[in-house]
Length: 557
Image (cartoon, rainbow, N blue to C red; front, top):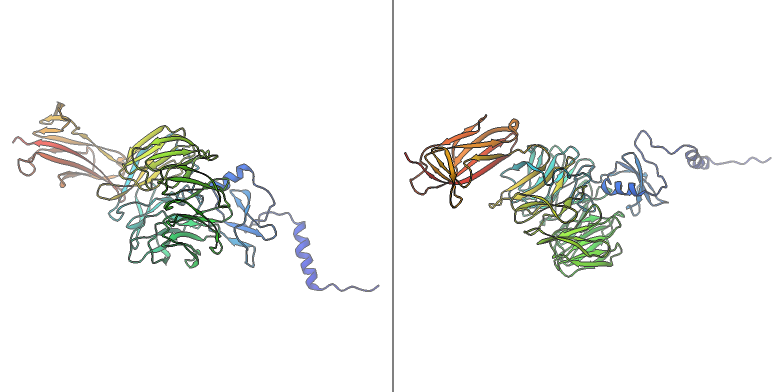
């Protein structure tokens, strides 16, 4: 019999094919994930929508599939790597962090949907208000990492603990008017505008700058993070993609400025609006054009993507557009332009300007209209798991609306042009500004508030030598002789001191109960008689709370 010689190389190839087929496909101790040919169930799709955060994925070129383990579930999703060129099939993925609110409007679809409920506290008590003289006018929104740390930008970039105290701040060029984003490694990306030099910054969670990328143009767009860690944002007259190391991947030129924030489809397509009136759809690997959709005016705000892939965008022509993934229009509805659209837990689309519209995703019909009594400019509506919608208004309110369009509650916070973020415990974080354009980060939710209240003197009362003897005709607060100014302090274990001022001049301070002071001498000349009493509580960390009351004060001695 003639012997047949089998080359060593052929034997090696046979081993590669035969041996794996005899070994069960399991997850290795290294954390690698093997490809599983399985279509996701509805529940898994919902998990994928809420928590598309990965650690290691496996790419199978023959099947064009990405597979990952998600909280011990196997999820198969369409690949966005077109094509995968690497030598190894295993690549590290730095998608958004698995936290309660890792980017603008929660996720890469910008749905504005939280996986946590606020049903017990809409909008809740004000737990604290963070102040800092380096916030300035606060237009940007905040994000939350897996440890509950809140990040937002103003004149500086801030990291704040869940109790409202400062963790760190970093002086950036210009100031930030957009929302940061956090990747799965904890790196925080934030953009700057109005500086002599503007950058996209990357920070480690400890506040050390990892890198910064010079853009040369103001950046009003909030960054979005792709499944492979690419950072997408609008800047000047272009849509830009950076590698995770801070180097340029590609840049797509547009015909006008881009203020819109990009969203990312399940297939990786990058959608972004532009002032040239077009919504752009770009391939993620090289930034080439997939299609352009024309509207009647600027697209200034962010689009969003529904679970079925429909893209929604608002144009300054006053219309909300529903666009199929192939770039054709499904329907359009007049909502008065305004805020970025978001998507409710049941698929309802929320958008508006002077009023909040709830729109049926099937045909664009209006389900209800809520009169917010103030423009929704930047106060993008976001919603909790129970369906409650939260948004801020120019007139100064955080408003909570039930899914049926009735009001669930409101709280005055000052002029608001930023979107809310919802924490794991149901706390709502939202920025606001006072009349002097000083910014604050406000926290509303369950628990005891961190604030102070003036209990005496009361508005509209007459005091004679410290005694309340009744109401005044024109609701003025009138004091004859003297009065004891009494203050209610919340979260006493966090208070450091309480200061009493008259017309801005410091009169007295106290560090322990009772928090009160007797006003009992003449301030300035006999006339004018009108004075402002201000009481400020300083809490641990770097935030404070002030209350004021105007009084007519007659000192008789």
